[in-house]
Image (cartoon, rainbow, N blue to C red; front, side, top):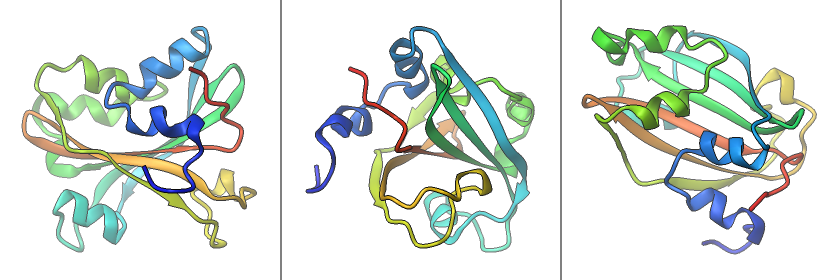
Length: 166
């Protein structure tokens, strides 16, 4: 783990299991998903590279807050290419306030690429409009999942209000 990572976040950043399940346990079952936005958008360059998407390809981009015990703990951004949203995976278009992690980890066809983690420095560009008051470095992770060999990218960023519960 890189220098500067708070020791309280090591286990959270490196855990390959379901973050949703772990947050549910940490919150005593008081975990809520608040959908900030969900629309067809062009993914960022970094997201396109992770998913091997051509430059002008659109994807379903979903941004949510995972709220534990009434406190925003995690900002999550999912990028689901349109070709992934076909067949049995059409259901991903209509998650509403259901956690994506619960669906991913219950699918026997799911595989996960290695985790990438990083410190996101404040640069005047908000993660989401609702989070534009955050001006401290944040730690997050992302991973490409595949369901029936169809990719999607999930990024999870721990917010300053998250207290690492172990």
